View 1 (cartoon, rainbow, N blue to C red):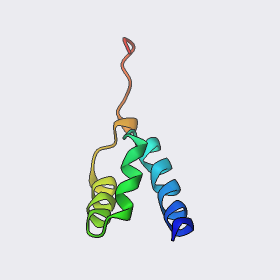
View 2: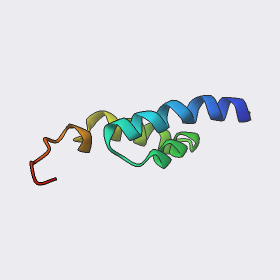
View 3: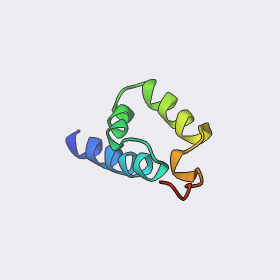
Length: 57
């Protein structure tokens, strides 16, 4: 079960980071029903990483 958990968490961790959210959200994939909410959130939310950067940042 630990191997399955690692295989599930690592990709979601990376997706969250690339989307601009904290990587620790990847652990939510292990909680039933919360994992579906997380996937819908990532799929339909505006990603901070996609927002244009201003010259002052």
